[in-house]
Length: 170
Image 1: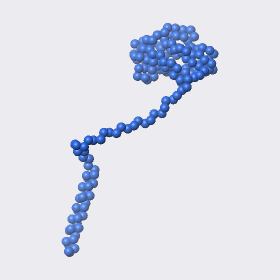
Image 2: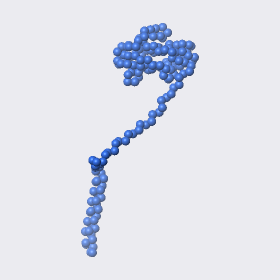
Image 3: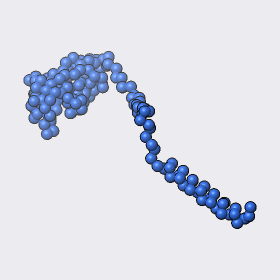
């Protein structure tokens, strides 16, 4: 063979190789073909949720206890509820009086008003000093009015859930 015959042949091989490389590169960037109709698509795999930390365990206080919870519209003497109520108007001030007794020197009493969706509508807490039985009053004034519906008051003693009481706003 002569050199003049080899060059065009070599040149043609290079062109074919270059075209093959371009074709392969373009097909790799293209869309994937869907699986054939007779092959079932695999279902999406469910992702396991991240593990939640365990809820904070608050022990029941040994030296003080909640002995009663009263709800109403007005306070009387010694922070007791003067007029009990379980239904309130959207503009009413809701009064919660928590009765407690114990030998603890101090404790924290907290009241959270929860709406039907479980979200806190209002919350207060007070540090109290004991010398026997005690009534601690909480007054909740609505900013713009209470939304109508069922509510729940959660009473906590040193963060321990001691009592709940339900009421409605109409």
